[in-house]
Image 1 (spheres, rainbow, N blue to C red):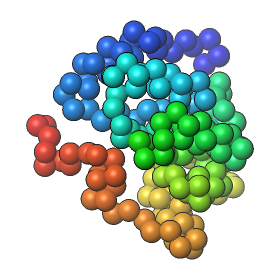
Image 2: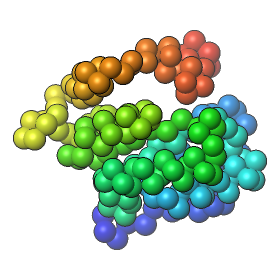
Image 3: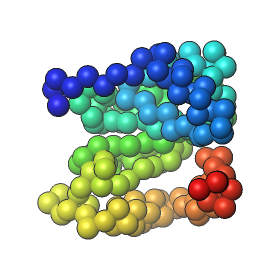
Length: 170
């Protein structure tokens, strides 16, 4: 892993946004560092992506921001300054053992949350989750205990501007 180079040039990104964007593809804009928000601002200025868009902020992955609440607050603040809060949906991904605590902080800050075995295999210290559903149930319980409402699948599709399965050609 340490010698892997993931090619992701501005030209590559521009081509993908043009080709897939023309067909109505909704992008999940993964941001591992504050520079990625500025890269996104460049593509917004170029007219290649238009609000509202979906920012998936990622913490705790090698080469990206650490899973600290201060980094989460900084990313949210920069996104607000660059785009205005009404121009985007903000979601939090905390890798590994930081998943549930960081997502809880992110939800309190008004963000959406992402859980799943791709991001962490654990349900809690020393307990491996049997499925993604285990993690969904846990974060749902945490957020409901804090009096947050959980979006239904239809509400989530509306928030994200998705077509729904009945409106796609496959």
